[in-house]
Length: 235
Image 1 (tube, rainbow, N blue to C red):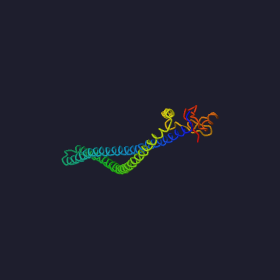
Image 2: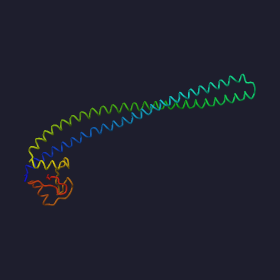
Image 3: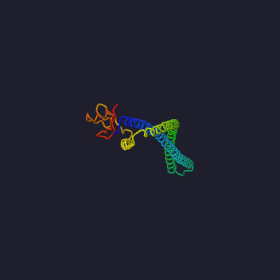
Image 4: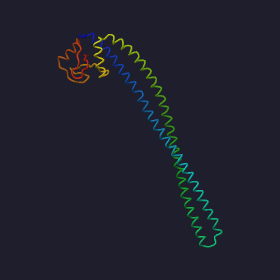
């Protein structure tokens, strides 16, 4: 059976694997941070595009209304000119009604034009604010992207060094024990080994039989947790 030195060699490998696992998790978190900033940037850019499209539509609608406004004003003026050539009171009165109607129509259209222009001004102010927000978030993204690249590079260097240490550590472990460890690690990840404290497996937190816990503390043989199958070791 493997003895205490064999377990120590396995623990050394386990510690390296735990460090590798920790660094790999840190590396995986880097894109998540950037992704959140990218999502904020995308939302602001979509909002900016929507506001600009709204301004474009409002301006087109305003132009159409201005054409209608000029037409109504011109018709009112045309009816006004006809007043001078009215041949009867009835025709004169009818022309006055037409003039009034066209002026009311023109006034309504003018109100719509002014309201649309006010909406355009409000949208332009909002666009300016969103533009500034986009620039700020883009700057934040660029900075964080640079930091993430540098952090990823540093983590890669550490991982490369640890992989070298791991190869050396694997050579020191009994081949059969290494195979067993790797089989458990394939299911449990970096927690293929579990510490025992107070007769409790810290991998699954199940109470161990006293005799089994004593064997773990003695460290003279490889002991598996009867609940989670992890290899157990004492502090």
